[in-house]
Image 1 (cartoon, rainbow, N blue to C red):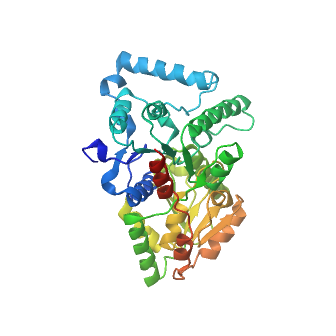
Image 2: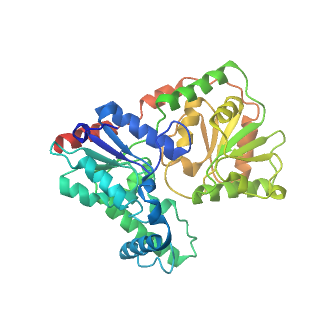
Image 3: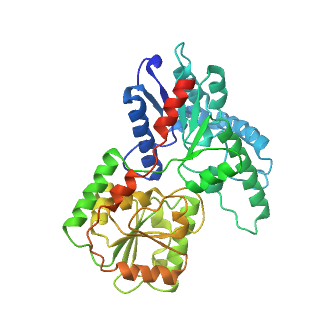
Length: 395
């Protein structure tokens, strides 16, 4: 990060650590950071990640913690008065601690032309007031429409649906506060556009070290056959929509066993807690978090990858990573709506018989990856650089 604020042209705010490894949030932030560096230069970017670290330890304990909770609650109730009756996790003030706001204001308060702000989460809404004060232009690059992603009421839960609708209205207000919007999902871009908030589709693509590692997997797969019947499935067990999909898949595998010869390694944070040992279907191994080195080894050997998705919005970043790595992928059709379908992905409905049939088709898959991914990748939009350069000119 530059020491002289006058050198900063972009302030990048993300709840995640930009990294080529880790979950989809890390890898999307890494893509955003790389695209910004290409547009303005690495030395001109100030990144604020892990915003909850700006909350002092004293504020997280005792009466100060309670006072902060009350303050956040009152602020949130103004946007959604149903929360006392039907609590929902969404709040536009998630990242609004005095320490964070002071750090941000110090970066943009400069006698020179103000930088552009790039925001990855609606929880940074409190920054909009500072932006107005100093003439900072801002673009939102949300990783999800959070009000639709973090809370999944049933169709019978009318109060929950109403609470979620109010959260969505609040999130649309947040999106309207920025000067432009770039969505990771075509579905979310279409939803926002239909409601009067124009924005563009900004698809996830691996780059830098992430792309290099995936292409190394691709090269390894081209050198030898895959391991017969080995499938891999990853997901974050603590993420509501992902957990719902994984539980659905495991329940289907319990009711009707996997095809003979199929073995599935299911990994990711908290996935080891998805089922008790006696409830794990035969042929399935719950691994929990898998270290990157081991994961890449599994991808080199697997005959296929599995991505169930029964509910939710957003975009599954793994779809593109797997296409880059040349790993054939079976995915729920719903997971394909937000993206331009990459090569090597087989979309299936959420019907277990179709999943079993497609797994059988890939059981002995050992074909070397072709070159179709590179042509697909070259055709994808990369709008962030153009938007940031335009906002810098307009500032």
